[in-house]
Amino acid sequence: MINILRLTNVLLGAALLLLTQQSQAQDPASPNWLDDVQFHGFAAQSFIDTDGNDFFGDSDSGSSEFWELGFNTLWRPLSRLQFAAQVVARDAGETDDGDPRVDYAFADYAFAQRNTGTTGIRLGRVVNPLAFYNDTRDVAATRPGILLPQSIYFDVNRNFALSSDGAQLYHESGNDDGSYIVQFGVFEPRTEDPDFEPAIFFQNVPGKLEGASSWMARIIYEHDLGRIRLGLTVSEVNVDYDPGAMDPIAPGEFHFRPIILSAQYNAELWSLTAEYARRTTELEKFGGPLEVEFTGSSYFVQGAYRVRPDWEAFLRYDELIWDNDDSDGRTFESLTGLPHYSRFAKDWTLGLRWDVSPQFMLRTELHQVNGTGWLSLLENTSPAATDQHWQLFALSASFRF
Image (tube, rainbow, N blue to C red):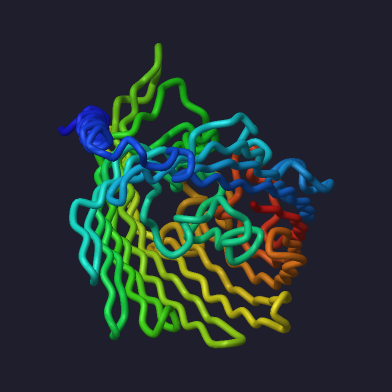
């Protein structure tokens, strides 16, 4: 199997060598390199209150354990070459600890540039091209709510979904009929999310999950300057399990194969967005009850209306089914003893956004949820004590520069 990290290091080294050679050929009187650097950042603090279940901290009593602080930079030393990186500290209850980490850090070289399009390659820790919102999910102002639609964008495993270590080819093109972006990447996924092991095994295990060779592809088409947007994402994400000492679990493999369809219509005062995912999850070579494969589906539909230029309201329905052949979870409950409603989640959300200034934003939203399919087992350690029907109320203040 290809060693993605080794391949990435080789390609990144080649890109840096190319940069050195081209920089040496530049005019000594060229501007200071700092003139080609951009710096940006963001910060957000949220308050979450739930009745019965915990989400991002002890939210049953009201929690402020959801905050984000990020800093990113972009350096374009040559017209064809740029470097981008972002460092983030994020606290999200038991699912994220607030320690700083590198969200992404990559070199982007455009080896073909024409009037109608650009073709290039990105090398390093690259943002995963997943559906509509994954590229910018870290910045609160770009999300369609305080919380993303959890049926598509699982926040409890946010780092796993956001970015990976590898290489990504892309092509961007546009004309009078519209524009499109095509991306294809090979990578090794990040597995450091605290909730990743419980999400697979329903408990913490002695061994270690390690990213294996994976791939992801996405195409997005835009018509009439983004009035109509269509997208398709296809991927296979692979993770290996390395058993620990005296581990009863055999070395096995986790495979995740999502197909996501995305669509959006934007009018002057309103927009309508919908995404549908079909996901196959497979545990292989573990043996016994851990040798499973099932296919689930999820979707959301959201309508947003701009009451004023600085005020926006939205209504969303978001549904997650982990196993289409056991949509109510009754078979799962009989086999595991875990609640049947942990295998689905149906969420109605009403939200309001106020852009106080171009940099400062306030938000609030109310969720009415049936099921616990996207709750963290780290925060809800006794699944049988969770409530099937529950509410979530959130407030958020965010700033960007």
